[in-house]
Image 1 (cartoon, rainbow, N blue to C red):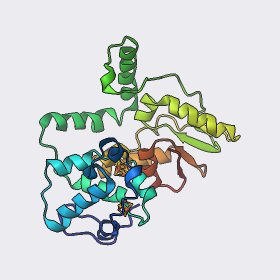
Image 2 (tube, helix red, strand yellow):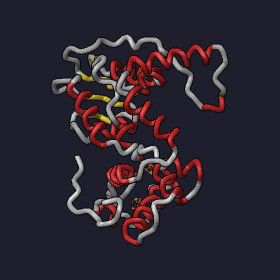
Image 3 (cartoon, rainbow, N blue to C red):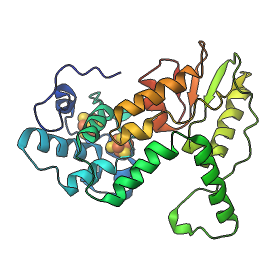
Length: 258
Ligand code: SF4
Ligand code: SF4
């Protein structure tokens, strides 16, 4: 969990130490996917921290440019692993997103409500919608420009529950859209001789997407629910970077495999 000791008095209420720990060395930049794609400083961890500082310490406005810079971060936390100063970027970003005012667009607010409160907490609904999407892909009705992965809904074939040597956490969107990644992770885990199981229906959405959207309370509830569905001492292997980083905050059994 967060180790925040003191918070700034600006509108984002960020952890003072975390905000000041960045020495702007830039070593994180090559590890940031949004910086690699755009090449823009504002889309890098260093640039985002500078923007947070400007808002917190210099009274810069929380405008559309600031919002976009924060929301385009995919919260993979690749920058944390690369940072020699130990900047807790994930915490900074979670606090920032929680402090952002609601989006102005009604369409977006409705879309977010449907996604976070209707679809993601109901995995059966996400899978049903994904089946429709998969049929659309087969009929070539889904334009390639959407950039969606080729969907495989073939079951993983792993046992559910019991007392395995290791759990494979399958999640929500990953289970619906990226099942082949789980299949490969399970193959690797089983090659070590481990008995691998999945948790079943109570360990779907872990709340990582919610916390990335500033919905911290809902996110924590979902994380606790998922972890309770994988009892015992066995490690919980997570092959999605955002979910792994989030669940690691709630249990030291979580192994981020991404
Ligand atoms: S976040 Fe860390 S690695 Fe990145 S610029 Fe700041 S101190 Fe350097
Ligand atoms: S969390 Fe990932 S996307 Fe966000 S700034 Fe860090 S490396 Fe970039």
